[in-house]
Amino acid sequence: MITTVHKDVTERLKNVDAKLFEEVRMVLDKNLSERHIRGGMATKRKYSH
Image 1: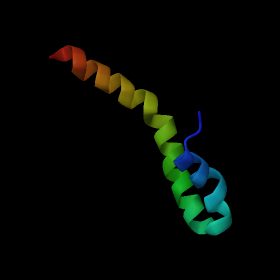
Image 2: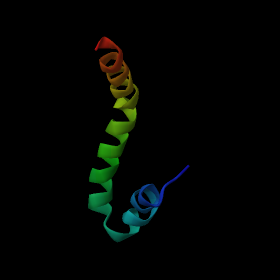
Image 3: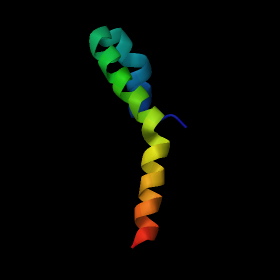
């Protein structure tokens, strides 16, 4: 499922501002690669109380 924001960032921003697109893309890629870690940490916090 692609949200409008995701579509704007991944498709339209490249044509509007290539430099900003590259910066945003780096943040999105980092977030994607760390998402499973944050999920595990949230689960750990949930059950440690």
